[in-house]
Length: 220
Ligand SMILES: C[S@@+](CC[C@H](N)C(=O)[O-])C[C@H]1O[C@@H](n2cnc3c(N)ncnc32)[C@H](O)[C@@H]1O
Image (cartoon, rainbow, N blue to C red):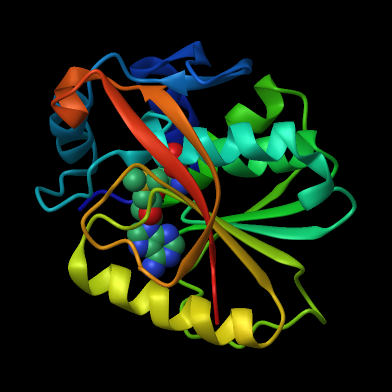
């Protein structure tokens, strides 16, 4: 596997995507791939790693779009608060939170996500910090974070179970946990629904051109 520098990653993101308005959040634009499958092959080749992850960072996912819309329409949910955008992908949710007045740290396990998030933050003239880290299981309390936001993370069974269990622990400690979900299979049931939106989706990714996405609050 080829190890890449952040400068090389940034050049790769710029080459493979173009800045485009987000369908449900047109006041924000993010570097977006025209199709994810060819970019997945290109990423595997570029990294010389045939097990490389789907380039999740290259599109604003339906659940993330709903959560970003909600934060821009309800800025009081995050204004002046310390927010973690967990599993940030291209960082749309964190960027919306920063636009709404939050102090944002965006985290993901994919180093390309951190680079894409920084490029997207700059394109939308907001400030946030990024980290490539798996925070799941780490003790988090209102001493260090007020709100954790997680866009579109409920699509695989094992990670979803880890996220759910951890979110419940940090919610019990007093951190507000908000998620955006377009009906993925492993979304937790014990939640409070805050909003729902119709989101236009790429047929290639979702097999449909529109999904209903909910914004939910995880209950302890
Ligand atoms: C479908 S994407 C959603 C991206 C973004 N939140 C959005 O809504 O557009 C899911 C993201 O979860 C990230 N991810 C998976 N496991 C993770 C973990 N343990 N910690 C942080 N990020 C993780 C992936 O790398 C990917 O970027």
